[in-house]
Length: 190
Image (cartoon, rainbow, N blue to C red; front, top):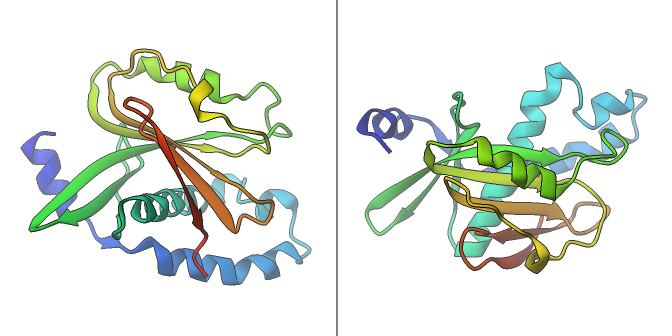
C-alpha cells in the first residue's frame, strides 16, 4: 500500500464494532415487529444501503476479532476500491487493511446469485494486491468451504461470512481462501 493511502487511512476514526452491533441488536425486535415495509426492515432501500453495509462491515470485523483473539476495529472510509478499512494492533504496529464488501443476496432478491459467480467476478480486480474481499453469504444453504473453487485472484485475501442460525445469533467466518481456509463460529455480540 502506498504511503499516501497509509497516511490517509491512519487518520480515519476507528471504532470497536461490538458496541455498534449490540446497539443494533437491541433495535431489531422493534423494527421486526413494526409496520414498516419489508425493504425498510431489511435495509434494502437506497437510503439505508449505507447502514446495511456498515452492519456487514461490523460483523466481518467482529468475526475477524474473534478469529484472531483481539479487537479488529472498523473505520469508515469508502473509495472506488474499498468500502471500509479494518485495523488491528500487534505489539506497537497498527495494521490497516482496505476491505471490499460483497454480498450473495437471498434468492428472493436474485435467484441466480451464487457464491461461485461472486468469486468468479473478482477476477476483474487486476491491480488490488492490498485489497481484502469479504463476501456476506446471505442465503440459507449448507456451505462447504472445501468445495469452493477460487480462480487466480490479484487480491490480498478472500473471506466469506454468514449467519448460521435463522435469528442471526450465531455466525461463521471462513478464509483466507487464497491460503488454507479455516472457519470460526462466533456469537453475535449482545
